[in-house]
Image (cartoon, rainbow, N blue to C red):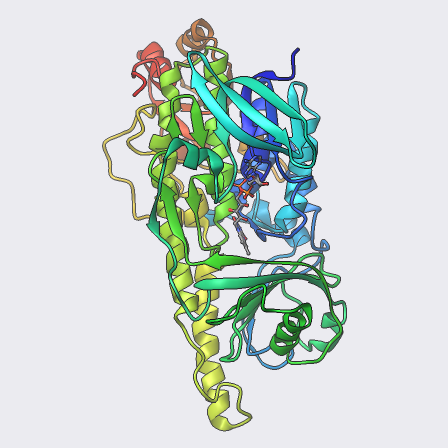
Length: 555
Ligand SMILES: Cc1cc2nc3c(=O)[nH]c(=O)nc-3n(C[C@H](O)[C@H](O)[C@H](O)COP(=O)(O)OP(=O)(O)OC[C@H]3O[C@@H](n4cnc5c(N)ncnc54)[C@H](O)[C@@H]3O)c2cc1C
């Protein structure tokens, strides 16, 4: 195989690009991923892997590997609010350690009926796993150190120009499809002339404006702080708002401090950056900087389009969040899952190329939804300001701290208990979903109501203490036959075979599964979204043609 002629070229090796390489590689699609950095992220970046993302990692076979990364197994993943980390604890939202999450998940129901619970881990660790897994797939080449400088779409493909980031070598790739996974400043998006739409530059007391990110080591933190360890530590005082995420539970932290007017990264020395850390701890402890940078909070942006011709955008290239709620990388992963199976099915000629338009139809509304949820969380924490006297050693100070604690506890619960956001995203109205007439329920961030109405995540159930219903699904399509009298599924099997669609038929006579799905036949997509449900097979060919995009034209 000529390594410069591939099915799909991906520009960018962050979470979106790496996840997409996994989805495609697992389907034997040839992929080259180019990233200008020397390797995966060296800074911690995102801190929260949502439960839906963990379910996707489980589907791909590496959820446990990811759950073993980052914090020690028994480290509490609490979110805690302090005036300063060693001074007054104001509020704490308790969350399970990795070990507890593993033990608890099969006993939960309702909103948290899931194959996996969230995991609190720095993005840099997740990227390492995604990279290793992608590199192990035949046909996938992960090439760090290459910057994409141009691309041109012509006829049946795209040619892509790249040059070595630290060298003079150049290369030209030819691919059937190109994907811009190149982050917030996406060259691919700008080259296509696609604009971000939405809000930028929103200023808030916290989570609005320039932020100084300092990746640092300070094992002494755990000696001088008299409170239980937490994964996320938030400082609430009028001198410096900041948050501190535990990276390894042993002394490495990602420290993010809100900068004030006139403060720029260049004007802040390392000693001043460490001073900010000591100030928010409230103790002159030892610490060393591992790296630092700045970023801007206050974006709520979604690209006007997610594709043009044979070129697609996903992840931060398609939407930019303020990181409250931890939704940017998780939305990126879901983009990759959605685009991955569709691109693969198109390359293999199983689906019509028109299915590719459904990527934008399905994912853009979700991006707008999630960006808006994140903005509400940013307003909730960022516009709530410390009152004068909050830190005073007096009765008034105590009252103010109690009042702040009540607010922050409620805020923490709202921002970090979000099964509705992660499980409840729906693709109603998609041309490849055979929807039903009833209206979807309220889209609430903290409540997820399992429903098998086509367009949403397949409701989850534990078959036994270790086996999730999802473990029984096929890697591609699944037909659930539920109940003793379910039709045999032969018409679906034939229609799928005629189309080249890989279909696994799963039989179950579990009565509560049939009650959950309210149907005897359910067709589930490779991304575990319900595509159709019904009582008979009479329309099997029509259903298969619809879900493979064969009944629509490419826009
Ligand atoms: C402080 C902070 C905390 C966050 N916390 C969370 C969180 O808890 N949960 C969450 O979900 N999200 C969080 N996020 C957001 C998350 O980090 C991003 O949403 C995520 O990294 C997006 O992934 P991506 O793959 O789309 O883009 P990126 O991770 O930005 O990757 C893009 C890649 O493209 C490469 N690239 C760019 N241009 C080119 C080119 N021309 N040629 C080759 N390569 C190129 C870059 O080198 C880069 O590696 C946080 C962000 C910040 C700043």
